[in-house]
Amino acid sequence: MDFTKSEPLEKGWSVDKKYCVTGKDGKKYLLRISPIEQYDRKKAMFEMTKWVAALGVPMCVPVEFGVNDEGVYVIQSWIEGVDAEEVIPDLTLREQYAYGLEAGRILKVIHSIPAPPGIEDWESRFGRKIDRKVKAYLDCPVKFEGARFMEDYINRNRHTLLKDRPQCYQHGDYHIGNMMISGGKLYIIDFDRDDFGDPWEEFNRIVWCAQKSPAFASGMVDGYFDGNVPYRFWQSLALYVSANMISSLPWALPFGDDEVKTMLNQAREVLYWYDNMKTVVPKWYTEGKKENKMGITIKYLQEYIKSKDFNPAAREAYFMKLTEEVGELSRAMRKNLRPDEGNIKNTLDEELWDVIYYALAIANLYDIDLEKVIPLKEEINNQKYNTHMVFKCE
Figure 1 (cartoon, rainbow, N blue to C red):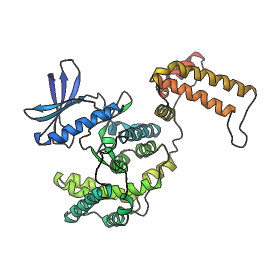
Figure 2 (figure 1 turned 135 degrees about the horizontal axis):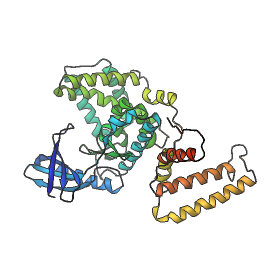
Figure 3 (figure 1 turned 60 degrees about the vertical axis):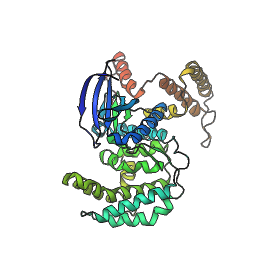
Figure 4 (figure 1 turned 30 degrees about the vertical axis):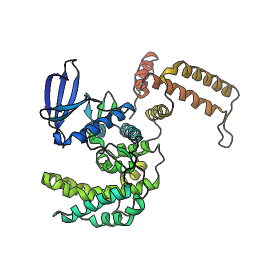
């Protein structure tokens, strides 16, 4: 691909050279150039991200792979947006949580890609990684108070929690810092550390999310598990977070005092969340749930329905179902059919939800965000009927 314009990008930790380039078609692209020694690694990543993109994951779509005078290059689509970590903390708690739900559901799709046959069992693979992390910490001249609580937790639980874990494709660095927002939609970027492993291990960077926005982090977990989070997950997450924290100081040391201070502060915060590893459900999740009851949002309902019932080719069928459910609702209203001892079958309650369900499903077919439409329409209604009301949603 030939370019008419090239602008270097400095952001990020990677050694790759990165550019925002403009093609002859006038479109912007992301160009990444890596050392030629990484050819096999980058080629494999290019093929895997093509697979991810084919699943409909919103992301920088891989466009071209090749070699030039500077090394091996990858061209990806350009996302014109803003960094999620800069925008999300300033949103309402409901909006933060909703974006977290979306991030969790996207991750679930990424994890639908299986690990290759014959891959070594996870207990052996990650067990060696734990040993390396602990050794690196013991050899590190800088220590943090409370590390022994994490070491003890790792030693008590590593064999039980790692045994017989499934493996899948991983983004490798999945957190709010590798996400962007464009047109109100969440996009995932930077698959540069992709790998295969336990899907739950992918949450080890959720610490960065929780520090920026506990509501977003909570939504990410709830979205991934559709609200039913297994206790075993929390036990495993505590193990993976502990292993990450143990290795954070040796990682930070070469980058200078500022990064070391950042990791020391993060270690203190993590130990607070886990009460020195005496609990496995972190405070950012439990306290956030108590203080901020998110309830069911229209955004959640639309995303929930879309995840299981989305067929743009059958728009007329959806409309027919809506009219059918309106008829059922009319019948239930005429007969005043209400629940009996909690049973909503064939009641007004059930039929009313069915009408709402298909209305939201139709909105999804046309990519209509009803949470954006409602305040606009209510402004029109309030002016039309002179209600002197202002629609507010905090």
